[in-house]
Image (tube, rainbow, N blue to C red; front, side):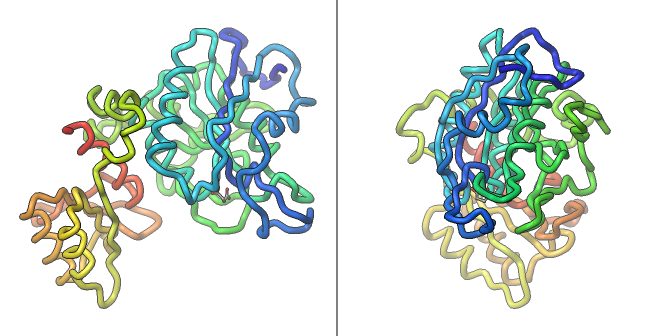
Length: 341
Ligand code: SIN
């Protein structure tokens, strides 16, 4: 197969498409049903057939089924396998880039994880769909075609997500709608660019390429120490039990310290507090988190607000999450702890 994307580079000559499941691979019993489907049923090779007619022969597409899951069930073992397959393919000189088909529900977490672990010099493009492959008007084929276009674009690198013609950076992308086809936002950072009729139009440089993009981030959040990568990717089958336990607690009216105390009693290693507004916490929750810190638990403060970030003040007793959403702050903390293991 080949690709016709205007700005596509034809050498190296291979795009690897890794399938992990999701609605893009979902099957429903009726074409009119966009919600009563089973995710992760259609194979990635079959998904590629849906865009075969739009390829023109210059670039080979290689399909590999890494998993077939509903991404709500994403877990450490699968992340580890996926990172391992990405590292394997990225090391092949003939591979221009990787596309990953993924469910929308935890796509932002996998994108962030892969960016943090691999910081790839080639593009890794996650794509997805909000409607199953069997829908009357599925969005998956166009998203897949656009993702291949992005992966084939000269100069592209880092982990991005492509959905509804939009290109999002891994650090910023968030699923913000439960149903609409254009379900993702990059918040205040804005889109990396768009895909229009097989051409990429950039609004800002590729993420990962810009030093200022990384400047505000602790090393562990952008490119963790080599020890972390080794631990994650090379540790093998026992890695699942090896991942430090990091949980998220939410602030809300009437929040207490009960959950935090229970987690500490269970041996949790890290806690991310999804605070209200600028990361504020109910006085009882804050007291419990300070007790947890005193007991050696690593705590970070993020915000449950979809837009904006926690702005630190000198009076803060609990460190903030450097602009990461709660789910991404959790992964950063996991990697931080893993790097020290
Ligand atoms: C999933 O995340 O695997 C199911 C939902 C979706 O892909 O939209």
